[in-house]
Amino acid sequence: MILGFHFIFSAYGFWLPNDPRGSWSTTIRKFDLLKFGTATKTDATRSVAAEPHDYRRRLHAKQALRCPPVRFSGQQARAIANGFAQVVAKQHYAVHALAIMPDHVHLLMQHHATDVDRIATQFKARATARLNAEGLHPMARYPRTNSSLPSPWARKHWCPFIRSREHMRAAIRYVENNPAKAGFKPQRWRLVTPYKE
Image (tube, rainbow, N blue to C red; front, side, top):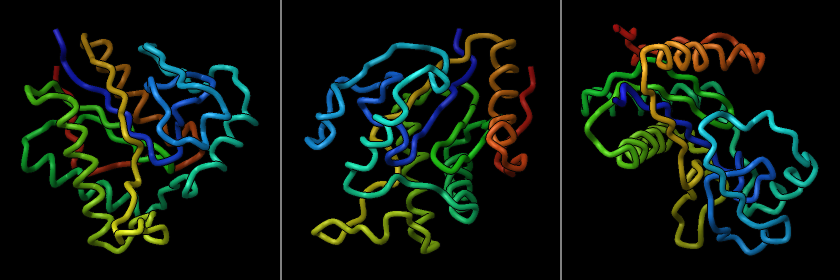
């Protein structure tokens, strides 16, 4: 039985399709990235962030991107949380942990009948709309030829399913501890509700 979803939303440029640690991609759509390797599809259900890899090759690949990798500021993190809160209120989702990092987001929520891809789209789209509304879109300096802005998010998302109460508690601790592990202050977001077994 699935009790919840642990979404990981990457900011643009954070985790490339040819990342030497693996990625969720089977293709590379940007020609300039092909010289750094093919797509590195992985089906790992645990984090591979700490896996040994060619750090320099990963940085060189990021330098080939059309725009610099996105790094969310504190103000932008608040706008993202405001956008997420709008989704939670409208869709009646229960979010049990949230960490908005400079280059990715962890969002842990209770199981819902809505398809996970649709849920991810809702959260990312509303967060982007809030960034726009507050004049904080990180891609504002890099408009496309039609004047639209590139998405601040990676195309895909990662979403391990939570299948037990123990897993849920461990995932909540992981998400809550994520900022401190990276040297940031603990985060408290109003949209988060305590997990009740």
